[in-house]
Image 1: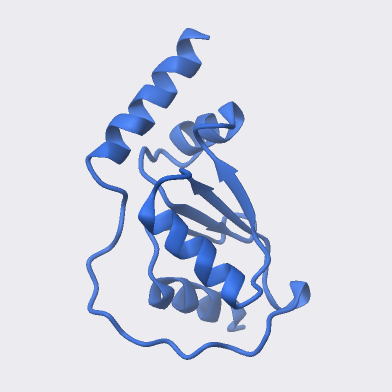
Image 2: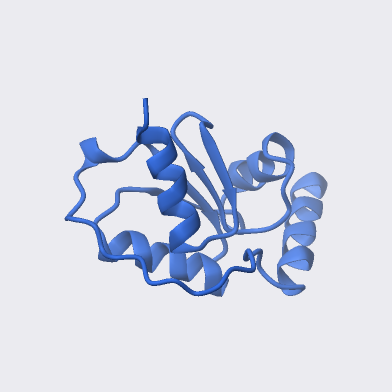
Amino acid sequence: MWKTTMILALIVLAATAGCAAPQAKPVNVPAPAPATRASYPKIVLYSLSWCPHCKEAKEYFAQRNIPYTNRDVEQDEEAADILLNKYQSNTVPLIVIGNDEAVLRGFTPEMFEQAIDKLKKP
């Protein structure tokens, strides 16, 4: 219980300083054709319910029908442990694509699409 409390305290402390978001110039990314589960690898989003950048990622995925699994690190002790220990991160959003082929810290549509494009290339 103590470990869980410490993990959540670290996450909340880091998140209150601001969610992770890369500094990038806004660029319009055209909406892709409707997605199918087969057109995307497995996507896992580690998030907090109140994080604006997490919300942006969720909305982006929903608008484009991109299948993903959301792991709320406040509600899911295992997800918090994975975020801190496996990915050595105390900020959200953290997006894992495939079987760790790409791990994105923060979210922008451009960053996500670049990672997907890179994985699709032979």
